[in-house]
Length: 79
Image 1 (cartoon, rainbow, N blue to C red):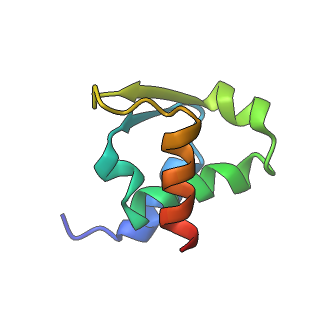
Image 2 (spheres, rainbow, N blue to C red; image 1 turned 45 degrees about the horizontal axis):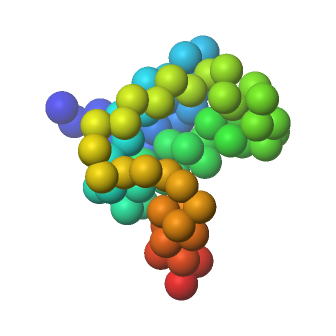
């Protein structure tokens, strides 16, 4: 309590292994997307390095993350 959320997100971005608990609310959260941006920047956009760092845990049974789901979230964040 009382710690900066920005500092917390930066610490997550520096983690060697990061467990990401995926749900629709996570994917719609500006703060969660900022955490992913920190990870992305740390790995200079290298997907292979980022995949070795991230351990996803999908907790929403309706979350498929197929092409349609990904397009919906892309539209959500772009539009």
